[in-house]
Amino acid sequence: MRRMKFFPCGIELIEKSRLEPTSKDNPNKSNEILHRFTGVSPDGQKFFVQIKAEKKRDGTKRLLSIFPEDKQK
Image (tube, rainbow, N blue to C red; front, side, top):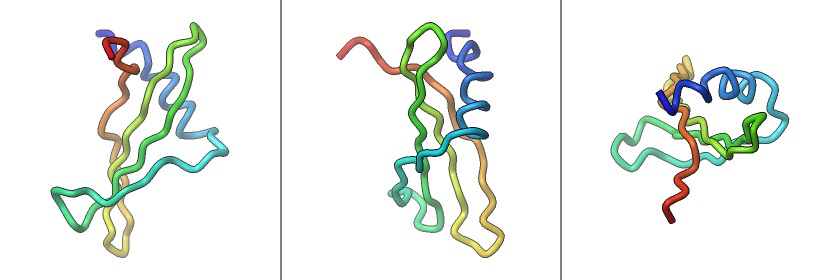
């Protein structure tokens, strides 16, 4: 449930972000790229959105996760 409250914020971040996400090759699957967007919710909490993109011609993208920053560091 703690991740669900970030879902609407995550969708809005993906749709309206003008900044490029942090991207890297998936170390477990060479045919995938992982993208990570960083956002801040209306109540000031930092959160992340992860998307997986296929390197194939069709460039299929899938939402992997939306989660808050871990404050236990």
